[in-house]
Length: 518
Image 1: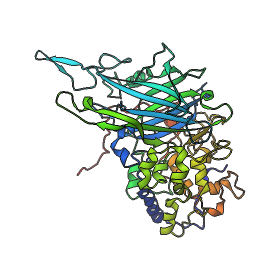
Image 2: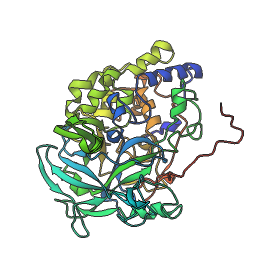
Image 3: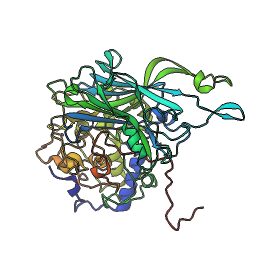
Image 4: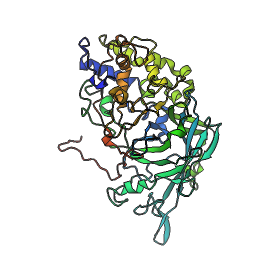
C-alpha cells in the first residue's frame, strides 16, 4: 500500500496556504474540539470525571505477550499535574465500562465494568490539645499499597458481563494472588518529594499492576487503573487560533504538542485474545462508556457536608461514549453531540448516517475554495467503511452492521516497538490505526486526510480497499494534511500499561528566557 506520507499536493491543485488555513478553521467550527474526545460535547464539559478522552486497542507488543490484547480507556481530560488537594479520583457514583463486540452486529457481547470507592481515613493531627483533621490527601511520604500516610484510599472492582451490558451474566474479576475482588488504585503523582525522588512514583505505581483471573478465561490477564501522562498529541492552541499553523508543512516538529504538560486517568486491561474473540471471527470491536444514575439529590448541610448528603438513584444513564477517535469532533453536528454520547453503536445507522455519508467539512472547504474540490462519491462509502464497518481484508468482520467503534483484527501480527509507523495502515504498518489504535498512531493527520478522500486515492482505480470510490472522486485526496505534531513509539513504554509515568505535582514549566508577561 502506498505510504500516505508520500501523498503530495497535485500539480493541478494550486491551493494557497492561507485558503487552506481558513478551510481548516471551518473544520474546527464544525467540531467541539480537535483533541480526540476531550470536552467534545456540551453536557460532558460539566462532568469531567466521566469524560472519555481516548480509547486504544492493540495486540500487545511487549516481549512474549503477543497473544494478548491491550485496551486503554482514558478519562478526565486536561489534568494539570498541580491538581491538589483532591487531585483526580474517579467518580464513585459512576459506572465506567469497556465493551467488546466480537460478532459485528453493533451490540456488546462482553463488557468490563469498573466501579470505584473513595474512603477517607480522617487522619488528624493534635493541635493545641485537639485532634484536627488534615486538609491534605496524604500526611507524609508514600510508598507501598495503601500506606497509613495516604489519607484517602481509592479502590475499585471490575466485573465481566457476558451478553448485553445490563442483561448478561455477571461475575467478578479477582486478583490472581489471593483471590480478592477489590483492588487499590495508586494516588496521583502528588510530587517528587512525596514519593522519594523523581523515580519514586513509577516504582510505587507499578505495585498496582495486577495479574487477574478473568472468569471464563484459562489464562490470567492484567489490570492497572491510575494516572498516566497524557498520550494524545496535537497542536491544540494553534488549531483554535484560526488554525495558526502550516497544514502542508513538516509532519514532524512543525508545532508543539499542547498536551505535553497534562495528565490523564487510565483504565488499562490486557486480556488473552482467546477471551475476546468468539472462536471464529478474529475481528473485535470496542467502545468505552461512562454512565450516571438518572437522579441526583443535592442536600448539603453544615453537619453532613454536600458530598455525604448527595443521593443518587434510578437506572444507569450513559453520558459518554468513545470508540474511533475524532468522530464526535469531526463528524457529528453540534446539536447531536450529546445524543451521540448517549447512544449505542447498533443505532448509528438510524441516528447519524447522514453525518458520515454526506459530511459537512469537505463541502464547506469547497464552498470557500472552489479549487479544493470535495469528494464526489455520495454517499461517502469510504467514510462509512473506515468509521462504521472497518476496511475489507484489514479490520472488517465477515458480517458487519454499520456501527461506530474501534475495530482490531487480532490475526494481524504485531509490529514490534521501534518499527511502528505512526500513520498505521496508510504507512504500510497493518498493525496500526485504523486497525485498532496504538499510543503513537497519528490519528489527527490520518483523520484529516481521510476526510478529504485519501482512501479514494489509496484504493486506486480498481478499488483495492473496497471503499466504493476511486482517485477521480477525490481531487484533494492527495493533500498531506498535518498539524505538525508527531510522536513515535519511542515516546511510550514497551511494557504494560505502555503509557508513561504522569508528570509530578511539583512540575513547574519555566517560561523561555526573554518572555514578557502583561
